[in-house]
Image (tube, rainbow, N blue to C red; front, side, top):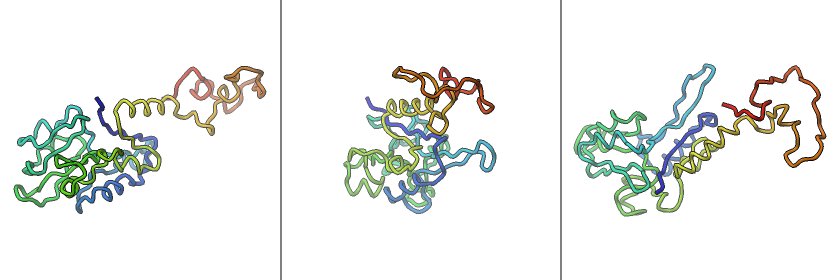
Length: 226
């Protein structure tokens, strides 16, 4: 069975907030509610990274465990959704979520916080798929249309990946294993080693160079970069 997940590659995220804009435009969320946001870690110092954060659709979701009215549930694809008609705005899910995904517009009938709103993986809610009622409450159901979430599709650097957890994990694993091996960063052995298809070596380096780090993963094809 498919399990839908997000992953954000911090080595690629450039803090452009394209994912945030795409989410708001696609789902027409109310003012003050951001289903997705970009967080910068170590801002202004070496090692600065940005990461796009929303509901991570946890397999063991803490928000689901603490909801007193059971308005949060899993779909067959592992997506965490909620029923706004059952939500009482208690805020328990907000305090339980480690990602700060649940949002409250501070307007509603039951509690001063209002009905909870969060990322739906662009898969709507309990109403009929692609219906007007579903769009008004939960936004567009792109999953029912055979598409991926708008935030991931609009990511210019493909830092944000969404889809089947197995496929997403394979893509990220391949990136980690090959990261740094681009044409602008060829190491000595990789650029001037023996051709993969055999034959004579046309370009040779007969000795170490001043800018060659022998222990670097770029110069040792047996090692993978971290």
